[in-house]
Length: 105
Image (tube, rainbow, N blue to C red):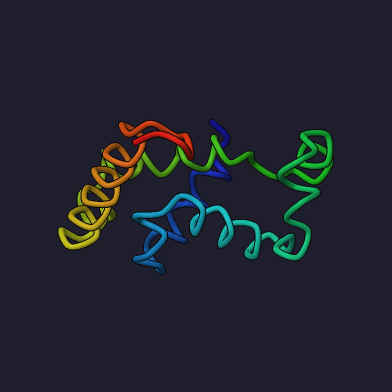
């Protein structure tokens, strides 16, 4: 993993509690910090654009976050954020257990 990405993610996690629990918030902060926040579609849709501009992909940023949080417990999300995420995941699973058709009873 690029050391630059690792350092950028670490600085964002130290400054932004919300980014610790949400990879999309983290990625948007990363793009803003690099000066590409206004070009989200180009960044997400075009790997050549990311490579040309030296930007890490979403998965690279997410991996850096997971590694940093595994090594530094103080960079993990708060207990409240973890509880909220677990409840949302439970709701998501329950919703998709049900049939997804309009005429089903």
